[in-house]
Length: 391
Image (cartoon, rainbow, N blue to C red; front, side, top):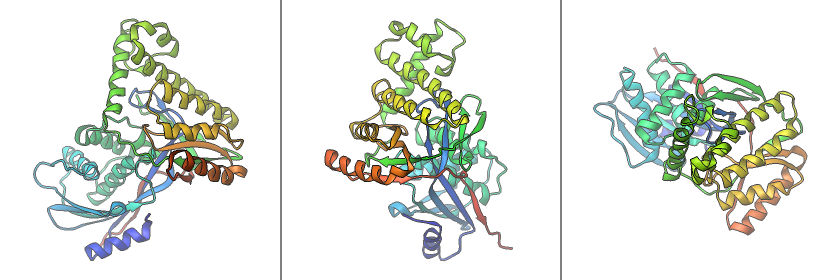
């Protein structure tokens, strides 16, 4: 785990110079609205106080020298000629950002970069989006690029699609950049219109339990869900030509055409349309400060992700089932792309310590793995922290 100071020290040690730019890139949680983003529906994420810190400076060379402190790995990315894919995923995330900026006409030069932080990898808090948005913000500062945060989110999404090969939605990058302290971002993934929903949880707090089961969004299961949802749209369009994505379909319409959709596609479409409806219910509850009404909706979402969308796993199912039986927890579900990562829990602050201790002990006995717990706060999103321009 690294902080600002250790990253700056590593930069000075590795490159024998002082960083010119410092960036704080945020991880994110998503209260509800999972797998709705690439279906152009609604999501309700927030930036959190788990970070990747970047230190960077121009190096006068024709390549970037980059050190990933958390995994102790170093690589070089040439900025002349055509960008080449690496066998290292983290390098591709950075190269994809450079590629997108070049396509916009930016004249690139070499940078020295060190990054690392306290954002756990493979946990469902979207370390990949923080990596993208943090590096994109660093490149913006270094080359004085005129680009606003929503457009950086789009650029990072295109990079994932076109260079990395992950067909992700816009939510992770948008939340990482556009987060605001103590507020959730209600994002319409079709129009990218957004509003902030106050997140006053009263006696409750957000606790993440990391199953320590890793997932990879580039795996075939994620791509299969994207394709299955697209197939559902094609079927539903036969009955309502105005449907362009599952965002335009209702749960009632999906139920009406269960037979035409077929068993697998029906389940995917039923989950997505139900999730959009649940999300709007959560927003209404939070506006009224009715936090207790949010909890059951989180349990419903987990059941949908487990049984209809089929992206959970036995380890996270165990964590959610344990939470459901604990008196201090009012809601719990798997968070993120699925197949591992964290459960997100709404926990009574007075019982947080007992819950964490109990769930970790039970999980260790059941799965011979040591879970980690994170109490997270909602913060402002990814941004430039410091820029030192030497004359």
